[in-house]
Length: 308
Image (cartoon, rainbow, N blue to C red; front, side, top):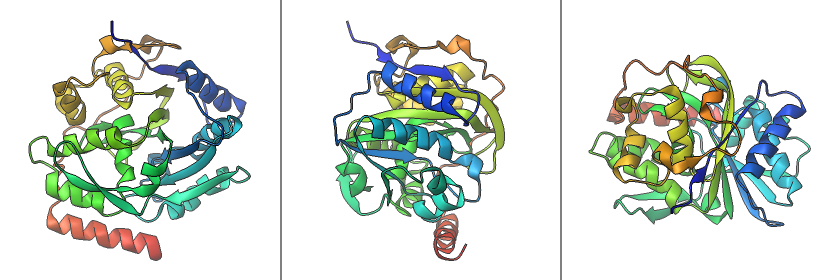
């Protein structure tokens, strides 16, 4: 009999105080997170843009995650490659650098790409810093997304692709069969071992990955499987499959964790939460970036990195 995948869920009412530290500890211990002393851990938040702090993983959430791993004796780096600007710039402007002050961590840009051949045949640059980690701690922000419906666990690994290469992947593979969905799913599979800790305490709904609406869910979750964690979130929202292209591809591949039958709940069960008020986009926009959008995005990223 195949062992079921744990997805730990807990209620967290705010980002303040010791309750958040306690919740992160409960999540990580309940999924049997194993950390060796001096293990190289990369904590990977979602730092999409400093112009929309709601769209990033909350700085206090990342602080609580880093504290737990430091207490286990790990060597911790925090890093991302935002769509716009630099990771350090976004972190400084949104309060994450300040939140991490006093912790023995190193902040890094997920740059220095190494070209990797994915099983689907796509060749893409992945940050060497991500590839060198012994454990990637994926910390996505739960939010609506105008192109892929909802982004939670799996999609956040796309930030391990440095800089403009993400936009160029949209341009090349966006609406070409299942190419883009395959790319997203296979990135996390070629990275080092990972766990995901989801920030859904205050989510972003209606649209995204920026300019959405605040949606208080008071939910945090963790799993060794990003596919399983996404499956649970989509089920809790009763999200229509027509709005979940990445999950549909995971199901087509019969990936472990793509159905609720694959999953066990060591803490709270999904019916302990009501997140039905989360509003998805009314319809999905094309995934493909046309040449003009690609150029505008590149120019905006350079502007935000050096001048904004």
